Amino acid sequence: MNIIKLFHQFISPRFVYWLSNVIIPYVFVLALILIAFGLYQGIFIAPPDYLQGDAYRIIYIHVPAAYLSLLGYVILAVSSFLGFVWHIKIGYYAARSVAGIGAIFTVIALLTGAIWGKPMWGTYWQWTDPRMMSELFLLFLYLGYMALIVNIRNIDQADRVGSILAMIGLINVPIIHYSVEWWSSIHQGPSIMREGGPSIAPEMLYPLLTSILGFTLLFIFLFLYRLNTMILLRESGARWLKEIIDE
Amino acid sequence: MSNYWLYVIVSYTISASILIIFVWISYSQRARAWQELKKLETKTGIIPKINKYD
Image 1: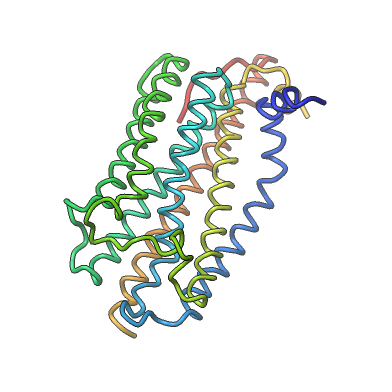
Image 2 (image 1 turned 45 degrees about the horizontal axis):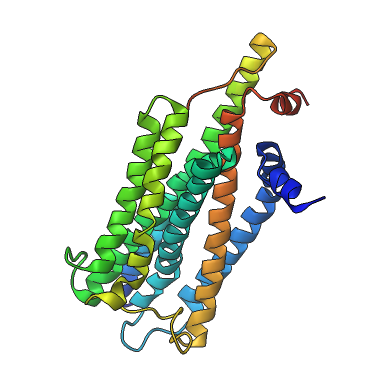
């Protein structure tokens, strides 16, 4: 089987529907185990921070949520690109499926960041802070995309217009990541993905990495689950789907 | 127990609630889509294309 044929099979809604149905339960169970283990280690086993005390434990939910809010947008933009440029149907389905998940993780990142900010910085929110504002802008991009696709009556047109917004908005992702380096911010700099390796003590870092992995799997579960629903709705006239329903 | 724990507990409670509600919404959307397909198929013998989204 040549690579193009394999690619075409991989992007067919029927194959994605079948594959996602097979792996969804395993991803979900593994996600729950890793999240439970990571959070247990982070909340009960890891020592308190010398400066922030126990407040730093918000990191075990804030960091995965913030990272997944960015990952979600990258997937949204890349899927939109696949749909818009190469007319790959599954690209549009994936974009629609991931937008809500990305928005949810952005909300969690913003809320947990604000709650963490109060004891550490003395304020829930700082309107002039580049990291907070660029993350808030990310939420508006997600909401804007979702508002566009549900309010344009013609589905194909909605897909195309939404894709343009999604692709343009990708510029915000590096801005969020580098905002703490490019501009003056009350938000701390990178502690994991930085030159010279992570600056966090191993007993705090390993639960964090476990938590990140667990939430990433939860993200994948939600993505596949919603993609599955999207395929059911969009492919509802297809013969292969009728065969599945008849079974 | 320091005052900081309150912030930790509130953060985790809010995040867990949001995620649980979202998982539930995703589950019910899929169940509804599946039910609708079944219903349409039983009625007509064919599955018409559904042009709507939640």
